[in-house]
Image 1 (cartoon, rainbow, N blue to C red):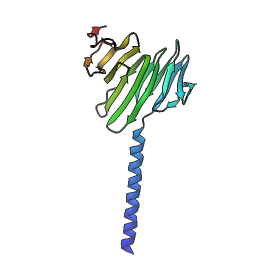
Image 2: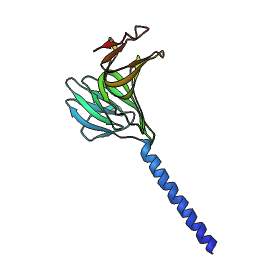
Image 3: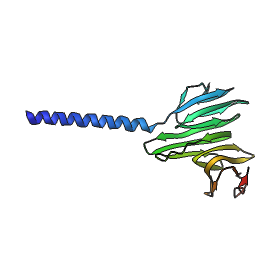
Image 4: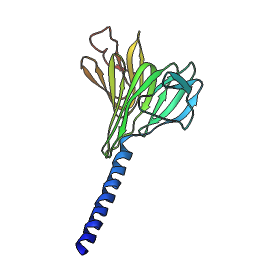
Length: 195
């Protein structure tokens, strides 16, 4: 009888521990994407329909966001801030978080955004912005990124360091107050330009 009670207590302890660990691991998997501010005509896509963005709204991974003329929105993505400028279309491809890694991947179809990504020594942060011609990765910085079919991808680094990578794998490290431009018509990115 005494052994049976000990066994029951042990099983209960193991079950509770399992559920507590499961709760902590699941809560870290999906990071929040929250609308902080909007101005003008800003919308997000649900299925095939578009709905207006509103302050406080929580968006899911896979959501498309669009802004109109003289319109913009600010999103808090994984603890970082992103301003979506006028006439921009983005898609949030990935947004996850664990105790050691925060990972965000934004697709910029057209227009421009400003991303402010905090550096945290305890958590590795990956914040990528992809366009049809190149990808930008952040290392604790603030940057403007724009893309248009005629202009290509342009990255302006406000603070910190950014990596620009073309689709064929050419990497450039871009520092503060430098511009990076890559158009799909050229084989190499333009030389870094001081701004």
